[in-house]
Image 1 (cartoon, rainbow, N blue to C red):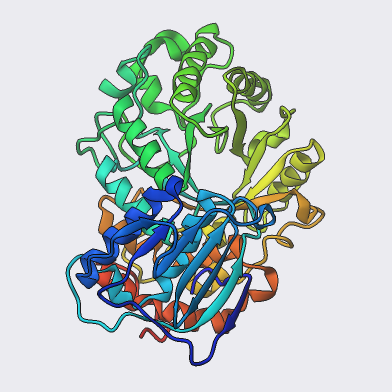
Image 2 (tube, helix red, strand yellow):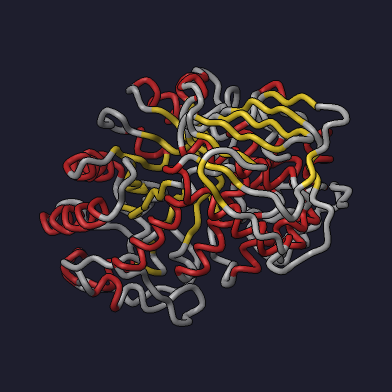
Length: 483
């Protein structure tokens, strides 16, 4: 299984077999979780699998002790049935995710398959190491439709990811509707890298994505990148530029050339409207203001800008999240700083400065966690500015000790960003995400004592048949003995 559970014990001679007369029992308020499990197993097994109140062949209960926490659960599979117990709906969902991995890979199929449907007898007690376990999808460089993002959510939720960071604005495209500034999407969202047609999410689209993510117990973290990475906005509204002259739309991939005008009142009126409308649509408590690679913003102006932008985020009831550069100045209470450095001493100092101010960290080291880095020199997709990132390198690091002089208590969790300069369709996304994302997910969920490359490699190999059934275009990394 991936992530490795906190504690698991085999029950010899206690194999559970799902038969055609099986039922799913559930607490009334957890009906949706049971219905979704039943729907998938009906497709693959052909069994009726009625869902009923109370106990069943598979019993799902959210009446567990509070000590299990928000995402913890207990699972028992033996010859008499399967029981999953949690204290919350979210914990129950995580337990169902584990059950899906315990079943044969063909249980994920979209059409009826031959059995048997067996689960080796086991007991599991499980809860996450970190509360933030994220993946980022850049929909600005290349746009991905609502259905494509939903498919992405389906896949990443299998590995207990609980945050989806959407990079919604950049030089190449603005992807979320803002009623008060309509040209952001009408003009700024019209293209993408390479010059082909872009796209954007209407408010109804975004609400659909937020709801779909929530059904998978994933919270959406929207990012509006500022003050750099803003050419799409600058091209849409001349008044946001120095001299009131709008640049052309940009469809290349170089970075660091654009900047909002820091000393104009209209800049902050613009951000006030944008942050307000995005915040109103986002149930989660974080709003990401970017802050990275602002090479065209004079540093003194950058230091003046970030507190003003952060104040606007807080004004609308959200906590600030930003890339580690924002830690060079004062941060509001509750800020989450996303570290994307490698072994760069300056980036490490900024991480320390963030923690000294009371901020917490989400770790996304580019030479470990960036899913768009090439696996090797011949990888046909991706970039390599942070180096080549094999499956082993992506997995073999410890979030608690990555940054010197940063206490483990300051780490909220991990996130695997996927930038899409070279990725213009979902198959290419899958190729770069799998098999590396499950390793980052395990670093975020499993206890430190369970993290071991040799045993992980064997467990990862077992995911291959599951991805084949799901139709995932995964990279068959040569260091894995794929089953």
